[in-house]
Amino acid sequence: MRKLAEACEQIANTTKKLEKTAIVADYLKSRTPEDGAASVVFLSGRPFPVWEETTLQVGGTLLWRTVAELSGKTEQELRAAYRRHGDLGAVAGEVLQVSISRQPSPLDVQGKFREIAAARGPAAKGALVRELLSQVTPLEAKYIIKIMTGDLRIGLKENLVEEAIAKAYRGTLAEVQRANMLLGDLRETLKLAIAGKLAQARMRLFHPLGFMLASPAESAEEALSYFENASVEDKYDGIRAQAHIAGGEVRIFSRTRDEITKSFPELPDALAGLPQDAILDGEIVAWSYLAGETGRALPFSALQQRLGRKKVSDEMIRRVPVAYLVFDVLYAGGDLLIDRPLRERGKILNELLSGPRKPVKARSTGAQGRLTFDSEEQTAPAPVIRAPVFQAASPKELDQLFEAAQARGNEGLMIKDPGSAYTPGKRGKSWLKLKRELATLDVVVTAVEYGHGKRIGVLSDYTFAVWDGDRLVNIGKAYSGLTDAEIAEMSKWFLEHTVEDQGFRLIVEPKIVLEVAFNNMMRSGRHESGYALRFPRIVRIRQDKLAEDADRIERVREIYDHQRN
Image 1 (tube, rainbow, N blue to C red):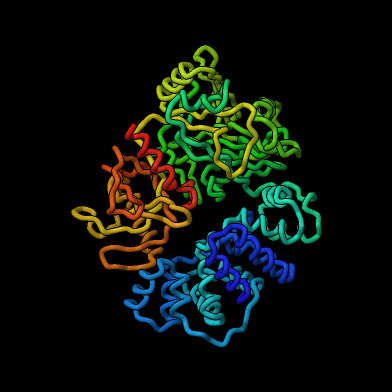
Image 2 (image 1 turned 180 degrees about the vertical axis):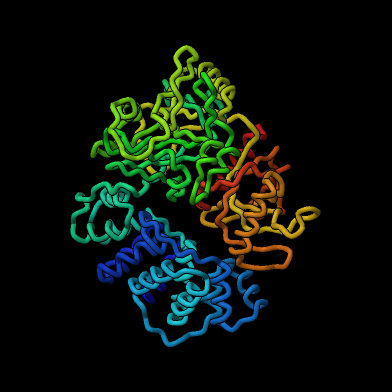
């Protein structure tokens, strides 16, 4: 582990991507395949491979307390160190004492991570964390904590690790990337690269692929400047969901790659009978089934009642019904379809959803149906619905579709290039989103404060940031928009994930993403970003997004420049 920590220090000390890649490649070639396999997972900033459901469930408070105990430092000294570094791993590297190290390997550390993940309760987990950190050098502890918190901060993204594997073992980058995408496991990808068998990688179902992302468009004219004869869908106010179906088994994943099947128990019954194994992409929305009508999507606030629940009662299912609006298919009948154009994937999806269904033993809460917005051709509502697709060749047609979408209560439009491939995890101009409303940003909460008046005792004032390169820079503060119940729930989370207690103000782990709206934007020296939001308010908690998915400073500049024109 010491060699890995030293390599991480080297990587952190250079801004050149080629140098970072070379350091990782040289390190991997010097390790055994087993240690290399554990190392590539760590270098991607995770304790476990993407496809695994294993999580450490170790909060910042537990780690802070452990570092304090092992270092013998006072709370004031630790806070001072944190102010210097802004990172608990770096604090550990400074304050922990050199001890007699057992020199654990990366494979040993990953084994200890599995013990921590399996332990029940903070006391048991804390004992194992303390045991691990007491057996390593301060430098090793620094990076072990960074890996545990998923916050490596050395300017090394997973794509650079893929490049290093290709460089170390003479595979092409495209082969490495495809193998890793199919397997969801850098360990197995590395082993195939070592053996020269990257082409043998096969799709592993029930591990989520990256979601293709859309870029914002400011107008119909801009949207149609990128491609002609666009495919157009409503933009629904729900959560993105990827459904994997094979052999009657169904599992559903959010955009953060977390499994959310248990939150929507009626959907597996509706999906299990598809005629082929498949991976579908779509949006789960709260759905109003109106008598004699097709139905319509409800606001996100209705769907929130279903999110994060380990068990959903029949009463909740009746009170907040949902629909899965499917707009893409990534895999069907043994074939990966992502390289095929959207128009071809659409035809396959239509056939898949309209074809004969296999009989399934599972209780069915509704049959699959096809949704139409034509009042003369209505079908019975069902939880799995093919999202309607329209065509637009002119800004006027697009404006008309936009107005119709908003009349249906939806956010706006998704505008897609019919010839585009599906690019997992990437954002480009092949998919665009058009929303005409007050500007919004997805931001990361970095600090929280106790409220005033009726909110004394709860953490209701949130300072938030956007990304500038690989660091977060604060851009504003908001205290309105959430319900009392949401604030109470968030207060509990923030108290459990505090990294610095400043009394009235807490610095927290930067993991909570909010969507915030605002009236306009100003240049300001008050925030590190150089900008300030006027009248910011919280639209919603983005439980479907990771911190790394939040907006970047470039998006802030675009909004500011557009506002001035």
